[in-house]
Length: 54
Image (tube, rainbow, N blue to C red):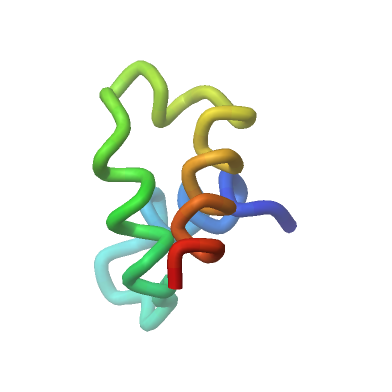
């Protein structure tokens, strides 16, 4: 499962779900425009940059 799948699985989870994602992934994706959040390559690139910036 890549970052795109992880983010969207979390974003579309039921309200009572305990599913979480790392804060770095959330921050990286939320910095993208709403249109870019639907682009697998852009989400994965943003997530990779966030991990490498640690």
